[in-house]
Image 1 (cartoon, rainbow, N blue to C red):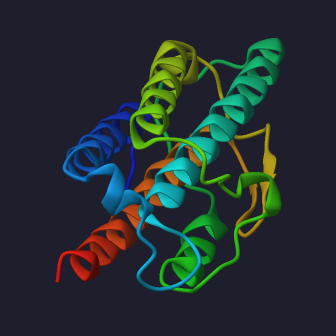
Image 2 (cartoon, rainbow, N blue to C red):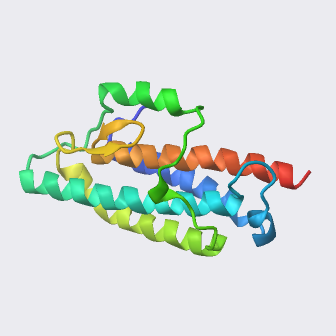
Image 3 (tube, rainbow, N blue to C red):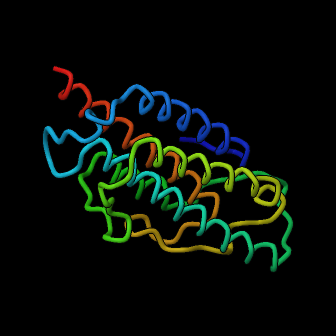
Length: 178
């Protein structure tokens, strides 16, 4: 995972979101509600992704506001902090328990979750110019598993999170359709 600019993050996240949306669009509500193994259904996972995406957008908004207030310019380049790759690698395949505030209710349709994901994508898209314009590295917010992340790193982890759950959704879908 190498990102040299904010644009690289946006491009990677767009590909991940399109793959996620393509996968989810092929799932029926009955399949989304089925729970073949574990406690979360596909519907739960998609709702969880929508909740986490929304939270990441809110965090990025706050961090960007702080960066704008500081007024330190950026040339649009980006690099992950030293500990990011190591910490992300540790949890990439580990089973982790989502914090309570991002647990799904199970009462949201796939369509509504996708609508929320798309709205968040629009919100994050509207920040791109400023995320490229201002230095982001001095303003952070703690992630429950990765420590302090700046706005660019929150965008990276948002994409990686969506990709992680797309893999889980595909595995669940394969079991349901056996």
